[in-house]
Image: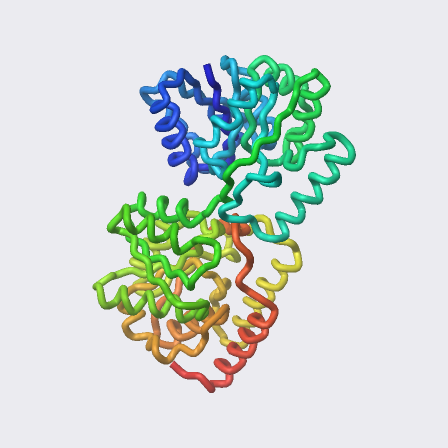
Length: 428
């Protein structure tokens, strides 16, 4: 029997599709298997997703940690209760597709005790890469691991690993690393036990949050429009597949990177033509949590104007930002409040909802800003026209994927935009 163990921490959005993919694939193969979902102290709706996965499925089980301890500890708890002759460890995003499993199984059939997926050896295929800084960090870490612990292994960090059952239970019973870094410890312990470790080239795709975000928004009953400025990472192709499978998803392809402001204005114009009543701005990089969406929409509907997802009012928060970036954002918002004389505490928030009436009167053709400052100018114009601008607390999480769109030049242009608005050179 095969055991599949998935560590889960706040995976409410990604987990349903992953569970479905695993059930579908292993079911089609006719495998006898069990699926263990190891919840690492999630505080979102992960437990509800797990409960739904377990309903009517006796081979799906839940291991739950009371508080967040890290991926290594979640896996150790899941492996401890496993029954399989072989144990597959895989991440909740299925960056390595479950269809790559036979490659690892072949290595165990040939006598290996562990088969690990690799993005770094000949024959591997990285379809969507991580941000450059993460790639460099990963390669540096793996070089250190090679030098100190596991010579000859080029990618110890890929989350797709297949162990023989008894070996996995023995190794994870002794593991001491709870979080990042559990991989080399587990492999080192396996090697000490005399197990042969086989490294296998696989297809790997950096988890694209676009699909996750769209799925979560659609589950709330809202339509989605994806604006793709000829993204080089395959986002346009992913968006087209989503739109092809769901009439509630549309894609606006543009020939090049034309700016944040023009992207929203083009989408708003199409929505106004189609009769939409509410218009949400939401990033697809994972930083805007889908569970915060409905309160923002409800607040906009009630106010009749603009509702902002705010990081800087009581109840709002930011996770994962370095202090310098927090100071830059916080300072920019103070600058806007002082010069524009608006009480809004988070004018730069990109998570917001406009009413149709506001967008119909705001004068989209007159909005000058194209980048970061677009958000600021829209708040300013809404207030000058007498519309209510309300703020709803959100938890902002540093982007799951992609690189920040805000450069230092963009920040400087935004500061100049605020100055021009304050001097009355651009009037609604």
